[in-house]
Length: 416
Image 1 (cartoon, rainbow, N blue to C red):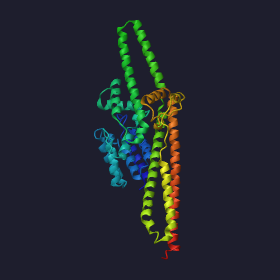
Image 2: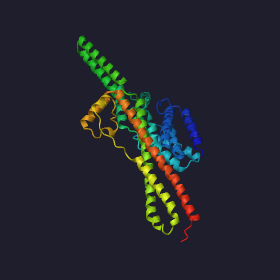
Image 3: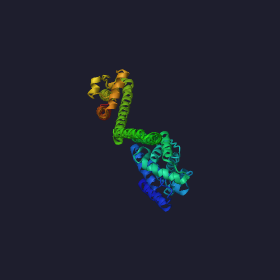
Image 4: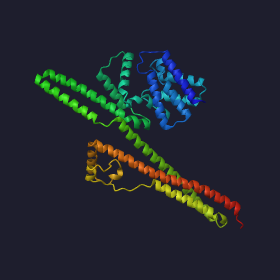
C-alpha cells in the first residue's frame, strides 16, 4: 500500500469537495482551515515518528474532519466527515483497522474534545493549533464572522472577548509536544485579551468620569490614562519574545527526554549483565571442575559483564554539588537558581530573594536559562560517552566470549 499516494489522493479529493461546494458563510471552517490542520498534524506527527498506518490515519482525519460542514451542515459534522472518509478509504482498499483509527480521530475533535489515544490527541491538538499561535487574532475574527452568520446574532467586542477568554482558559493541549510548543503562546493570547478587555473598561470608565467632572479634571484623567497606556506598552515591549520562550522550553524538554533515554538504556545494560553474572556464578562456576577448558572463556565473559555494569552505573550516578549560593553570586549573576543542586541547602527566604532578583533582571534570567541548558548538555555528553563505552565493551566482549567458548569446546575438549 502506497501511503504517500493515498494521502495525495485524499488531498485532491477533499480539495475538490470544497471547490465544488463553495459556501461563503464558512469563513472559518473552509479549505484554508483544513490545510492548516493538515500542516499542524504533519508537524506534531513528525515529533512522535508514527508508523505508516498511523500516519495515514491522522492525515486522513485532518483532511476530512470538517468536510461534514459542506456535506451535511454544522450539526454532527464529525460523523458525516468520518463516514465520507471511510467510504473513500474503502475504495482505496485501506484496511478496517486504519479506518477505525481515522474515525476515532475525527470523532475525538467533537467539542468538548475527548481523545483516548495518541493519534486522537494529535488530531485534537492540530485542530486547535491556532489557539497558541500568533495567528490566533486573525483566526478569531474569521470564527466570529462565521458564528454571526450561522446564528444571526451580532456579538459586541466585549462579548466576543469574554467568550474567547472562557474557551481558552477551559481548553488544554493533550500531547506533550503541543504543550511545550503552544501553552505559553495560548497564555499570551489570554493575557492580551484580558488586557484589551481591561483597557476598554478603563476607557469607558474614564469617559463617564470625564462627562461628570469639570474640564480640568477631565484633562488630568486623560493624562493619567495616557501615562498608564504608555507604561503598559513599555511593559509589553519588555516581555520575553514568544520564539525565545519556545526555544528554551523545547530545548530543555529535549535535553530531559534524552537524559531519560540514557538512564533507561543504562538500566537495561545493568539488568541484563546482572542476570548474566548471577547465572555464571551460580551455575557455570560450579561446573568448572568438570569442564576446566571453559575457565578462560568464562573469565572473559565475567570481566565483560562487570566492566559493562561499571560504566553503565557511572552513566547514571548523580553528581553531588554544594547546594548553596551567596548574595555576591546573585549580584555578580554567577548563580544558576534553575538547578536544584545549587540551592537545595539554602533557606527558603534566601532562595526567594535570589529568584526575585533574577526575575527583575531579564538579562540575568536569560543567562540562567542558557547556563542551565549548557550544563544539561554537558551532563548528557558525559552520560552518552560512558554509555557508549558500556555498549562497546558489552558488544565486543560478548563476541569474544562466544568465540572463546566455541574454541574451547571444539579445539580444547575436556578429556576427563
